[in-house]
Length: 483
Image (cartoon, rainbow, N blue to C red; front, side, top):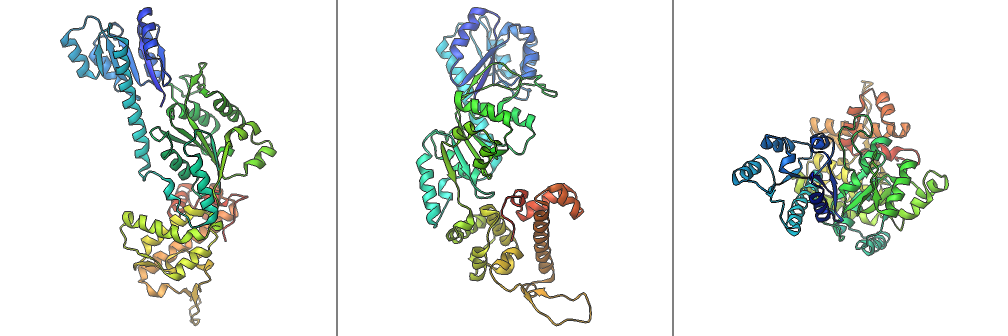
């Protein structure tokens, strides 16, 4: 993260000394000319630290410092006072000031204080980002493989881990592009820095620009405070731009400038801010075609694709399915707490024959679902979704004599081996999976249209898709169709 220090120092000589002392590659130093403007400025800007002389802090100073600590960014406060008394210092510290220092303190000592504060802020920021994931740290060892194609691919990955060059990661939906980017970051020299992921296709154009580059207060309607963008937050780390093919043209120009100059300009701002980040980008589009059709700038493409990593889809490395199944079953055993030791030979054959349009992500979701539904210690064919069962050439129905009741129908073979409640839940889950897959295929993955045809709310549809491990992107035109 790029540190931001705000100075409230009316004396020009002292302010100049502080700027020289505090300015370094990882710190952005700004000052307020008029102390009367300080509080409105703090309400509108984002800062890690305020360094102010005692006279610039309105009385009662303890209440003022307390209100500063209540701001959204909760900046640390360092007070400079040449004539402070022990009782005043104690009150300011009790109110929340990080330190009360003599104005005559050496530049070296002041720099140490600021460095310690910013190091703690960066650590807290990085820690909160990791905590939000609530998942184990990705490692390159996660990409276990028996496939010759995947082994060759991973050899290339290992060669670029230690470099600082930009990466373009290509692959279909669900192959693990972001997981690979996080694993490369975790084993690179930047591992102690933040990893900031931005989905370029998930935000409106104006919001995306602010998300990437930040904005100044008043840059647009509703921008009441200055906000740091992803590039500033990722200083000394990595910015991962997912779905880079969705980036609008004018933001492609700004991203090219970042790659060339290693500096950004906030939305509505004028000052250039130097940043130190590694950029990784990913897309499931054919980006070379986008370049030819002028949807993507060729100069940006060449800058991003210094090294291109194309992850093979799961259907092209079926040798990996067995080892992936064993690996994820081991993982889920510790999280779901179900004693499932493996799969039957028939279930594994079905998994190996399925074309996996959703790739590894779909495999993971299906295994998790199966572990939740299985009644024994091994996953059977009947514990898998209908689409996977049918791909294995396993009979799905047992013909039964027709009854007088016209509602009589043939039943799936596994139903009679379950209780009524389990059979009902399993068949309902299979029906939902098959119904939603078919409907999404017909609508090209359009959520609103799918929800309208299903007669349910879009929010309810999203919940069902999440439960079954289905993603709208899998069904967009140009993707591989569901079987």
